[in-house]
Structure formats: structure tokens, C-alpha cells
Length: 215
Image (cartoon, rainbow, N blue to C red; front, side):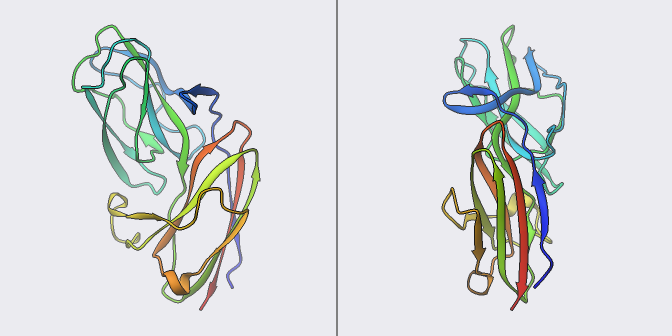
């Protein structure tokens, strides 16, 4: 049995409630406008990889336009994603999790004098924790302050050699799993697991405790 290690995750506060989802809507930039959006911040302040959000401050529908977001994930690998801009007074978000993003954002067409905010959603994913060929069960313990909705994903992709954009993550457990769970590597044999948070409140602190045994 390996000695356990602990990683403390303290996600950034997400005070805004937009369509019943929480966002820090100006985490990266506030009231950007025109055809090129310079960011005031290019890294998440909590050091975690979040979904990036774009909030439309106007009543104009900009959903036919797109923007490509480039940056890095929590594993330090380069990722990009193209999303449509939000409709009238709406918010959109990426499907990928970004720890850093590149400035400026350049939409496919100008938004004129309208403004948007670029922030983060209350969703993030941890680094990939790889397994070994001769490892046994993986024990994942959590100590949580506040309210957190989370799950554990696994992948059979080779996280040691393949780019993270090619990793196929599968949900290993139901969301809102117990504070301690064991993944049977002897049966499932994934190449890696990650801790994925779907939502959290402003007081959330997560201690993630990981220990793995030999077969």
C-alpha cells in the first residue's frame, strides 16, 4: 500500500447566479467589446481548470458568431475549443476545462458596441492521476467543507503518451458520491482517474486524499 497523499482544492468564489448556475462572470475580463477582446487575467486565480464562460451584457443575439479559446488544462497540456457566443442576455460555457487562456479573444465577427464578460463556471476538473500496470484498488477519500457536487471519471486512454484532447473520460460513479470511495482497478483497469466538480458553493474547500495498493 502506498503512502496516501492529499491535495487541497479551494475553488474561486462564484457569487453570481445566472439561470440557476453559478459563475464568476468577469474572472478573466469585464465589459469587453468590438472585434478583439483583451483579457485582464489569463490564469484562474484558484489554480484550478474551470469551464470558461461568456456572458452577453446586451439584448442583442450574438449566437451566430463564434470564438476560439486557446489555453492549457490542469495537466499543463495545450487545448482549444470553439464555441458560439451567447444569445440575448445569456451565458455560454466551454465543455473543456481551462487553467490558463490566451489573450486576446477574437470573435468571428465584431459585437460592435455591445459588451460581454469572460469568466468561469463553478465546474472544474483535477489533473489526471495515472495508474500502474500492477496497481490494485485506488482509494479516493474526500474531506469537504461547504456544498460540492462531484464525481470520479476514469479513462482507458494512455495519459502518459497521448494528448489530453484525445483522452476519453467515462463517469465511474454517480455524482454526489460518498465521502470515501474505492475504485476496483483489478476489474476496471483504467489508465487514469480524475476528480470532477459539477457545482459548489462559495465556502467550498475540498481535501482530496488518494492511496493506491499493489495487486
